[in-house]
Image (tube, rainbow, N blue to C red; front, side):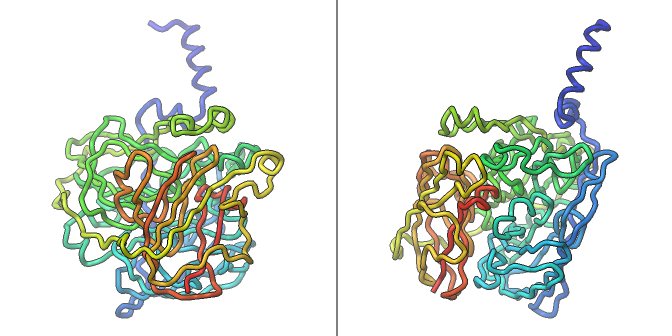
Length: 487
């Protein structure tokens, strides 16, 4: 029988812990898993019209608190957009907030003027009209703010959502595809909060150096959600929408799942796994069988920077890593699914190394000293910090290139390239898991060199550039970004 003193001591320890850890210890989540609204637009044949509003809102994220938030067509985060390969999408974006922003279609192959990067700003009370053809295969893409030097803060406050592409080939596989029933978006983000419930952003110098990491995990904007599974085979579209944290994911019962998709779409073959790593901006699609009626919990296991090749000093300085429970599944009422878990998925049209016309080298760098410590542009690529008036690389439309990404810094950096889906062809330890698929983000560890091959679409614009950058958003905002044009 527990003593009164021990009971009081235990209570004091629990009170001192973050709420996230106290709730997680019970292993029972009670908040309802929220599915973002699916927006199909207005369809006229192959033309699909979306009307989007960037807006401010108030969200009940924490108990008895109201959090000021940003969203797209809702108070927090964005609605899920859906279109098919072969569609022409027409998007009207009205900015109703009091700051200039953008919407970038992350992972999409499209003309530079439609990209939604820093060169397509939307001023307050203005509307941006854009259109482009969906030329790529079924995939889980996303969209988010890409305002110059303001991306991190605007995404942190809610300017992000999913953009799902469908196609005929994927429909033939009989994968789970009923949105919100057995086909589920899982947008994972970490946040910190002030006492009044508002988001706490960049509370210390370290937040800016390592990238903003919060102590509370949200899934689709909800803390500690439980998904009441309706079917026994679930398709989870995982997006790491966090500013800086890389997640090392597994279920608490160590159950296996099948990885079926990466950033750019379905893999050629499903891969059995019980863990996966998800860096900022990466997407992974998994299939999981919950026919056992269990209550599995998706968890993040902390992996310190030093175990991934970082310097011990930097690891000690940066910190910010802790085990986290992400969300729970209650499969006690799940009905038997009629969908498949196929081994063979789709055939890839891989870029050919025999057709490579140019190789480039991008060196990811961090400058220590006063610039790092006091808010200057301390992050660079090839020794240059972002300059919106400078073109760093010129690429030929339709060409195939290999880019060698080298990290000389003390931190891992997820490198994103606009307008392409590439294949990882060389990295330390080999290419495996979801990195066997098409990618638009790849994590480059300290003192590592990763090589990627890509074929550039036939979009030409000598004056409007695309971006390549670290997707730790604070690093992007502080200079680790470059520009290229396609001619």
